[in-house]
Image 1 (cartoon, rainbow, N blue to C red):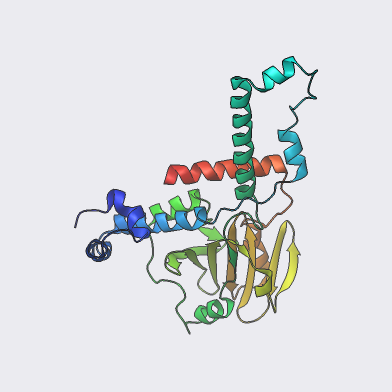
Image 2: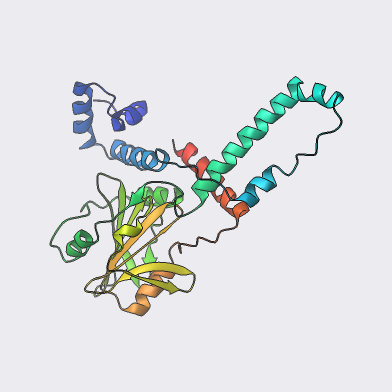
Length: 279
């Protein structure tokens, strides 16, 4: 069949006919371009479909409504209040506040976007030594890695100074980005998925504060670390020494939940426009 083209979204949503779905599946086995488009659509859908809009802080609402003045005397105010321009203005203000609320949600970390996530830590740890296969063995192109990074998925070419990225792939049906780093003797696997970390999944982990980074650590062989930032849950599995691990964590989003409201709205608007451009 021809390239999926505009049918990518319909394919991801399962809205094509059974025969067309089968043909598309067969086509994806041979077409890297369409497979890449499908992966991007799935990642985009996973991020957009669960966007939540929690209550913004009172300071933000006060700033947005700060232009409101005490109503003047009855009479001309009543006429102005009922005028079409004022009603249109109120609609615009309401829409702006709604956009700001969504942007605030998207620009934040905990509870920002996505569902609660409970990464399969034991499965990741077992997979680190080859007992299970939690990540795909297929290496994706540098072009796709660059696009993932631009869309908010950190895919650094190197971590901790001497750990080079040797593999970039996907797990869980394309919903999780998997990155492998190594210097020949030390390995590190990094999993990135949409959502925010479920506290109930952290049994056996200890909270650590490393500089600007707040992470949860489970010591062992391998060491497992996890944290969330900006609607992405990060899980690191590694046999690296503590100093190298700390450096690697410091080079990734830090899980800072003390973002200024104005900056958070700005970050959210950046993410929303980026997603719309990618659609």
